[in-house]
Length: 105
Image 1: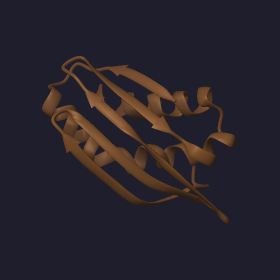
Image 2: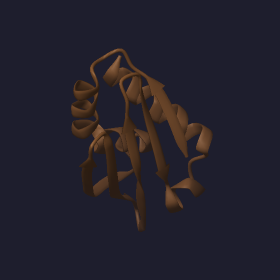
Image 3: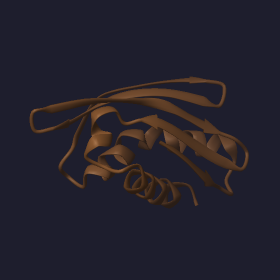
Image 4: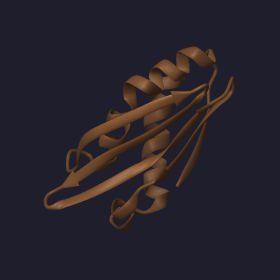
């Protein structure tokens, strides 16, 4: 799943927002049904590599991907793993795009 969102802030400011809000953004996908744990993130220049565990009942679904922050947009490329079986790509894109837009615009 890949989402690109335009922004009008500085690249450094957006990187800070992304860094602080990654787990909250994925929590929003589950609307309270999904618990996010084991969040790991590392930055290399303007690219964040991340991984986390999404837990829903007995299901544990690893999620991993990258976030690219440029001077004009943010691109999130995520592999939802098993979670993708329960949430369509379109729904996931819509939820993530809405959440990230609210944080960076």
